[in-house]
Amino acid sequence: MTNFAIRPEDLQDTLAVALGDRVQNISIALGEVTVHVNAQHYLSVMQTLRDAPGCQFEQLVDLAGLDYSAYREVGTDGLRFGVTVHLLSVSLNQRVRVKVLCPDDDLPLVDSVNEIWNSANWYEREAFDLYGIVFEGHNDLRRILTDYGFIGHPFRKDFPLSGHVEMRYDAERQRVIYEPVSIEPREITPRIIREEHYGGLN
Figure (cartoon, rainbow, N blue to C red):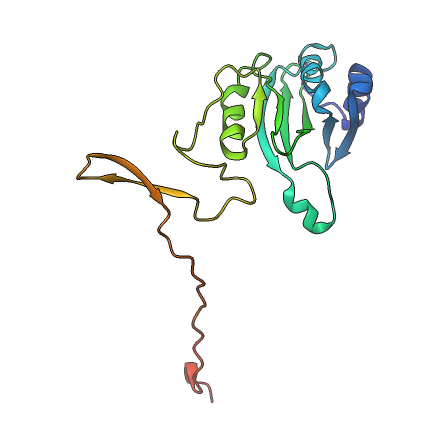
């Protein structure tokens, strides 16, 4: 077992050879290696990252959805939804980040990697629940954090702060009911105290 971390530049070279033209680029920032891959090659790249000599990323330690819609406000246009995955090789003491963009903003979809790393199961369900990203091939893709009757995806940047519906227990009906949100939007302005002699100062 290797007990020292590989240099990011060496890992970058290893990944470039193993993945070839299936990746857009492999970058290094703050000592971390990031692989950018198109959705069409995502599944095969992930399989290679787990199995290829010099890669051997046995563990998926994190997977998260992303909503890049606010990037347009700072002049960066492009696809709206993406997925970021963090992989760990215990045997080679190395880490890599993989980023993939969903090719369709209206139906954000990428392949599931749950068959490669079963730890992806709940992470992919979370990204589906919160961002609406569909993971093709996932055998149990359903909400995991919000209620089954929840409408929308609350981590999308256009999701209203107060939501769409609220639920409560109705004692008369003896069941949970859903109703339109009853919160009145309001602006809270802090009261500023101005006194001539505040604090005993003249």
